[in-house]
Length: 176
Image (cartoon, rainbow, N blue to C red; front, side):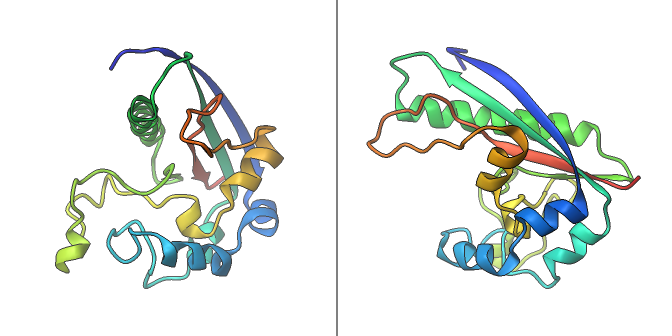
């Protein structure tokens, strides 16, 4: 991949109880999940056989990480999507290197480990050691998270042009 963009990394450490109070609304995000084409088709996506709040409750801190990707002028939407996917996967891999019995990674967006998830076939996840839930899948409001804790707005393309920056947001839940 040609690197015709710059990257800035922003992080914040948040008390999980505060984060859940301020930014988690499982029912609201479950409604959004139901509108998504991945709903019920990826093991990382709802519906779940557990309450997402139970995952948050196991941890004390949430270390949020965002990559602010600033493309050079003239980047196409296809190139921007490729850049975003590449950097999202790179961030996921970097965060997973820090994982241990006291640290659990939440991904940026839905899982992309497999081209076609085994859930579609009614089979168990082929790579449960790599699959991670996204912040949104567990009811976290990433837009509010970015604004409140990272001081950044998430930008969207409204007219088919590449926004000033793209920003995958992931993180690590930590037991103290």
